[in-house]
Amino acid sequence: MSSGTVKDQNTISGTVKWFDSAKGYGFIVAEDVAQDILLHANVLKNFGRTSVAGNSKVQVVVQETDRGCQATQIVAIDTPETGDGLALMREMLGEDKVAEISENLQPARVKWFDRAKGFGFVNVFQNEEDVFVHMEVLHACGLSDLLPGEAISIRTAHGPRGRMAWDIRGWDHPLDETS
Image (cartoon, one colour):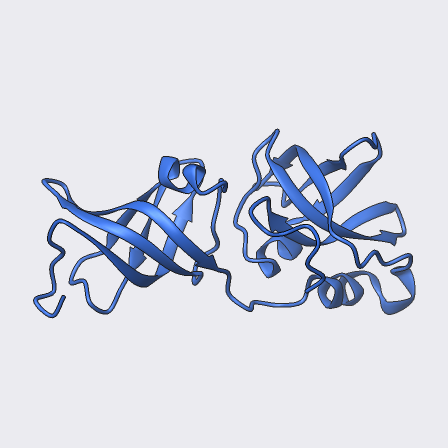
């Protein structure tokens, strides 16, 4: 693709410039493509995700259309190494305030999440207890937003006010993986 344009359909690697789940789209930049590549929410949804953090590395199938270059399929997403959610929680709350740290990923569903407020709650499957999710931890885990009803995987710890998620993964992440 040395010409700087995309013809027909090609698989390229790029970086998410930004994605806004409320707007339903975002853009990817790639060295081999002269223009930004549109990433629509439906393409992300077909991959099993509702959001992706800026600076995430992606591999996508792209197609040139009358409206420009757009992603038609996501092949892979590699979220940025933006931080450690557990270390972030310990920093926010204090080392001695974080206990009962779970190393196992648990399936959960988003109860609600408000980007403007910077937090929300999820429920581990078959458990009605609310688990707190902080926006900074969400970003440290490579996600930009959560939608009500979305299935995710989490690791938790006990904080001063109850369970808190310190690791949040998209549902596409294997549950038996410990890293």
